[in-house]
Figure: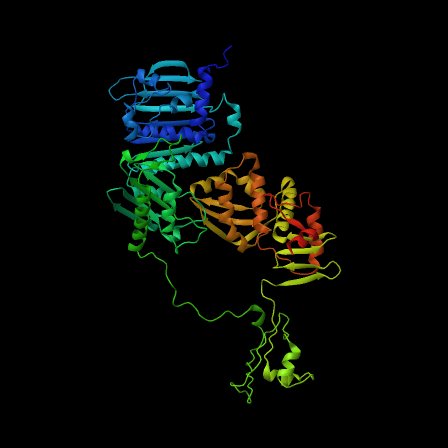
Length: 607
């Protein structure tokens, strides 16, 4: 009996669709690229409910006749390949002929298309790869693809979609990649009837500035380098344009977007000494390479590309970016006017200055043999009796005045790495580095990470209050302003009620965020340092839609505990009691350990 069965077409199509269409943004990418390949000069993207309800792409390209309109939904049907040799000289975006077949397998698709030399067009309605309707219609030249109810017959895949804000962010990312690659085309993007981006045809600089946001045009540095291996062009941002968030890094080869950590490293290396490691330089760089020397068919989404001469291209990119920054006098600088005076410690600023005393021994003979003894860590002298005998004091201890003539005793204060204070003489608890709380137990020592412990306490407290009522907030005397990327703006817009529940009050105007109130647990300085990090965490991290609130609360607790310190001895007992009242007191919300016990047996083995 045969155990090998051929899969029915509808199952095979759904499996193939899962490789090509992972989320609504995948549909957007395929339809936009098809519109570009069709020779369109105007492309409009219309989306509802982050693509879950509707994705529509309209273009004024060449269009199709009735026969091609029906054939384009078949698997492995494409107009972009005539022979196998064409795979090694690709000039178009899509070429596999699987995109429309995959989309039609998991959605309700309606196509209206008409060619320029025809009086009428054709409309085809497909559900699950089955043609439900085909009729002659009058429509505009080009094509209109409507994709409704994505994953209607694959509920498991639909349930794994993220929140609307995150899915919309992915859609906008795909839209911007295609729009940046083709500044000569006009693009429009609407979501739920609201304009997100309207981009007129122009040059690369205009397109980059329109997408990167207001004020970016003056911060762009042009790149132009022509070699036999590659032509490099585009723009990089000045160091002051660097951000803590990713999202403004674009690489294109032959007008095709791709990701490459190797080339990204070349660009960031050119900024050495100009920006910190926590910041990311903005760039939009275009490479032109002989199509025979690259392979774009190594990944289903075609965002990974194999280069035949990648090492040479790395060096050319690195030198091109460095040269461009150098031409515009952008390089690491030394501030020779900086104040060179030392900083007076805060504890000494209120005390009166005291002139130093210089003690001189008039009977000192440099040719006489002397004893050089090192002070111990407690400020005493090693080999005390031997020193007395050698200096002629016998066994009688010298007076302080006599002793001072021969030795300079320094009272060594503990360094930062040695600091500790004893908190409870009974329990023998003490603090190390103002970071770890150490307490003896019957079997050894328990060591608690203070910051992580505070993180757990804050998280439990915030979650408990967050469920029933908004977190306490404090008004800012002056609003805190931040420029937002397109993705970050969508995050703040889409989660406005959540941010309010967390204690934030804010206003959005264009790409500017104005923070009016913040959670009471955050100080103004902490907010300035963490606002970008908090926004990036909510924007660029893939999390399930139901866990957004949990994720942001965990981030708030983490930020709120960053600068926590135990200030007084009396705090320690209450601190420990509060920690052990937490149900999960051994780990942080992110699963990092808060404490561990070092047993005497283990300590004995180490020694």
